Image 1 (tube, one colour):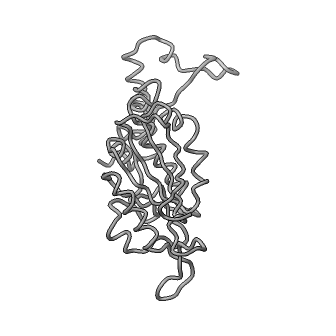
Image 2 (cartoon, helix red, strand yellow):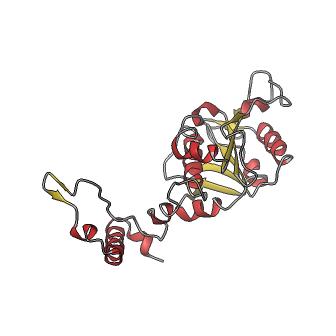
Image 3 (cartoon, rainbow, N blue to C red):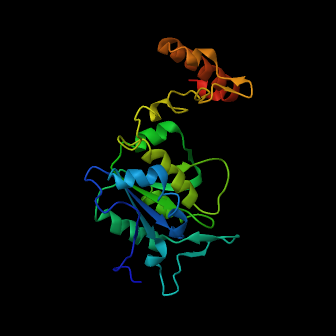
Length: 245
């Protein structure tokens, strides 16, 4: 397939709204993204026209007929490096269509993804996500194109696709109108730098394991106070680092 005749994987609704968050994802293995971004809340976001996702196969922009997008690294060493030319040409092509708020490279040495970052990115209009592979991408792409680098944790994956799917999910669920109850996202862990309190549902007594009486009292003020106390206690025990600020 030539660079002028792309068959992009468009995961979004064909009737996506003008105000939708638009995310372009660059990938060597685009099929890895089909399932996690085509079900549940991400599917709902796209069906409602609130989120538009396009996955662009990098090999469509390969440097030769064999689909080459990587090469040996200068200076020697194990592992291949994703080449400048395919990435640069694809990004240039995308930027001819729209202006991007961020061009994000998913990499283990990026800033660790947290709820504040997800909140901030959910307010943007156009994003590019670059999924790395092998030993990563040529540093010149990072120097001249990438505006933000994000890691989902201190470990290494086979590629950036799963990390990109995590980021899209974290952002997409925050878009107004995506969740049936829009207050749900506001009470998630990390929104106020606290872990979420314990939650319970029916039956109130299961094998003698009872739901705390306060949750059955109907006193919403006291319930809110209990939940805050539980969230603070859980955070203090499990993630005291969140309370440093």
